[in-house]
Length: 422
Image 1 (cartoon, one colour):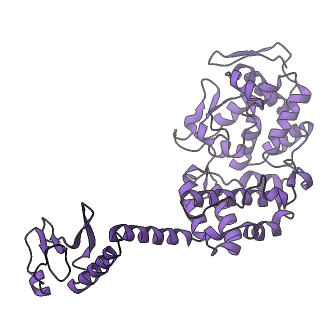
Image 2 (spheres, helix red, strand yellow; image 1 turned 180 degrees about the vertical axis):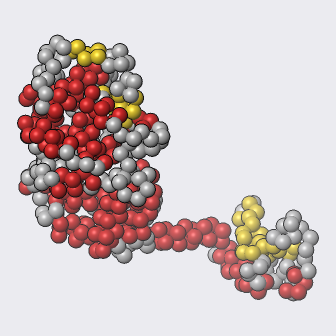
Image 3 (cartoon, helix red, strand yellow; image 1 turned 90 degrees about the horizontal axis):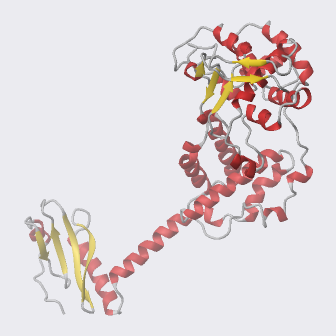
């Protein structure tokens, strides 16, 4: 039995200022611990389990009164009499409380936390908006307040079934996002068990496979033969949107690559446009050979500072990027049955039908990866010299001029030389 100390009053305890341990009596082992700074005062219960002495904190003296500390100490002593370690019991109780708190996290909480955690990985604000719209405005509208630990197949189906057949592409994206959020919640300890949003071996058994009923729709595009006539029409239109679209078609580029181009990326001497990796779909820098027509177009523009946009927005102060709808709106006004991305398809069809260029050269011009992983592992070249010829011939085709004869050399100021061989 520990030595029973004299029972101090609250007034006497308040006078204890010097750093150290002070037995306050009332319950064996109960003490006040005063820190070195004299402002840190806490209650400690000292007891032994076998030959091991243990100190159990009972709270700060500024928050727990002497009477409350004695009551807590008596409860702990009662556990000791029953052969139970109060410190271990407290840790177990705390763990159960934390687990219960984790298990009560709602789906909406987890969806928002996932978006916040992963959004730095996403390419642009539009991508983040799409996640927000689908997870919060669609999924959370039905299961947002459901504890994530309790989400099962019926909850997932309540979200997906109403849109699975009507908007299958959006539904598939949402299913994948639901699966990722629930995986995240599992790792964080908010739920256990298999993921009810997984497709293979689970949802595929109850939902129809979109590949079996969704008709593949390609980007609207013009047949290659119609593109030169459209280019003549386009060049008669004034405005930066028209110039940007012309450059996009000349380079067979994606809209975002062109709209966000900066003057520092343009190498006039080498006739190359260096598109940085962060703006490319495959996250690899893409070097675009600039045809004579593309160079002429750029030189006709008022050249800005290196960090300024080549095709700034015509609205506001002109410092911001052009809207991703600007070129599409232009096509709609001209009543052209195509989208911006469709001109890449026109280019690819032209390569296949009107040239003898190798498939890998055409794919490299579009910055596509090789489908075969084996070929990709061995193909270290970007086929730049061959693409010089290809892009020059494409520009000639777009202008309505006859293409250079096969074997005609095309030379760039940087010394690169290629023959118009296909």
